[in-house]
Length: 228
Image 1 (spheres, helix red, strand yellow):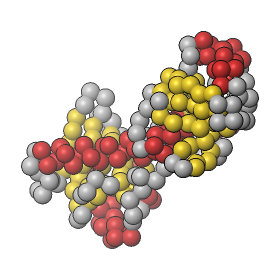
Image 2 (image 1 turned 90 degrees about the horizontal axis):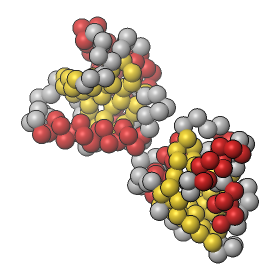
Image 3 (image 1 turned 90 degrees about the vertical axis):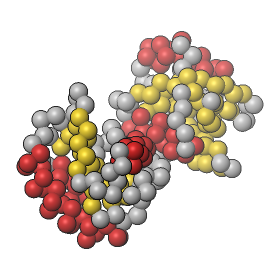
Image 4 (image 1 turned 60 degrees about the horizontal axis):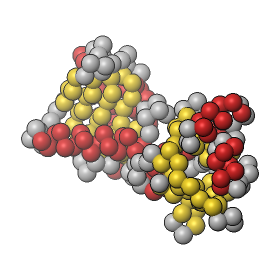
């Protein structure tokens, strides 16, 4: 099914596409990595609320939502909704031809697809026990940058790590509590999500020297991570 969506995405002006079930599950998607499963799940829920609120859920053919920076198109078909994020410049006539062909193929494959929205991102350097998440401590290679956010009393995680934590605890967050069980130390800190971190930092919590000292941890030590 993803190949079908990627074909839809090849139409000039289409940024990404997804198939939502009529109960709000994301069955399959082909979006840039920046748009994660949790965001798509929220989009699915809002799409359903919109179609029901406008009382068009049963008769919807094509819903066209226009914004200053783009458009959202939703096309209904047997048992599902095809959701597209597009640029304002999208040519609907050209897109319609592609959608009609894509939907025929999607309907044939839909019965074999299970929802994927609740599956958490998998990253290394983590483990869980008794419903709690344990992650490794890291330092930024750039000590000046590390000391900079440390002076603000903040810790940092990569974007992938942030999504993993949110999926694990099933809630968004702005602060995290880190607990060093062996030393009996803990602290709650605001979190800076860094989008351009190297992959080596995925699954870890980056702390500066001040917080490292407070928690009595060293690089590669593991701490319990909970929502602050």
